Length: 118
Length: 109
Image (tube, rainbow over all chains, first blue to last red; front, side, top):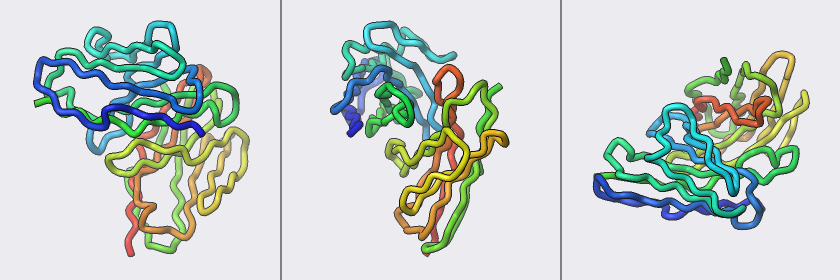
């Protein structure tokens, strides 16, 4: 159990356009979902945390108006990169937490979305 | 501040044993996680420790000492497919995961 899917797995877009990335928990209800960004050879950087039905909490330095997060249900969260620029090119990874105790506190990751902005 | 330290890179030989250390200083502690991340892929969960001691899971074991703020991941009978980055993460008092920078493990034949 604890499978998280992410779509698309890769996307190429032109500068100035918007891109939407979906994250779904397939076999469990996710109390919390997380969005990360990872540049080559660097560690994960948490962008925002979202709980179903409430506004996302963004990390310092992450622009809320540029990275729109919608957590519409307990199994779906979306990240929209608005007016993308080449510097937004990165590996975007979502994760979901099941809730409960023990190792359920951990996060289960989607396969990631590689975004290239030209 | 909160801090997770682990070596940047390690090299080991196929069939051998390697120990990856992680030390942490966080505001509160609700468990320590180890994840494996292959290049170009998302992390996958390996282990979770919340009490002191050793947790064994097949070829992988994870150890925790809360008083020392220390953990290690032990990989036995190394295989080429174990070449990956290994991420240590600690859950703080707010149930937020604090991530280490990861240890890149290189396995040589």
